[in-house]
View (cartoon, helix red, strand yellow):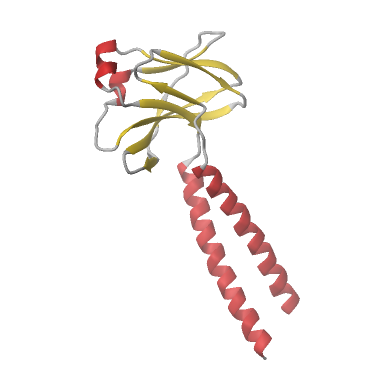
Length: 170
């Protein structure tokens, strides 16, 4: 019986480690491309097919109407515009001065892409402290599932450690 408890504890610790890696991967999600509103378009390369998201980074207490920027993403070789889906559960990254909010996501294959603004230059100049970032998309549901998984695993590991300590003292 003790062997099964030790084996179960070991398996749970490995699962906790895997969940922790997923959480770290979420917070280290680096920008593939960063486009300032002062620049009309920027080229970037997607090395792995998948889902990507568009984030807006601006001053924490400013307000930018993202729809007025009219962001487009197009394949450089085929000129095919990607359909931008609005993100329902917006992930946020808040700093002291800057905030980062996820607004759109799109599906893309490997290749070179162009992100651009179709808004007029006067509007873009009025929001000069704003940048647009392209990042790998991480599902909100997956993130919530991992957080609850970590909490559940910590609870089970605590219970197993209590059982092991009780058995050890007998």
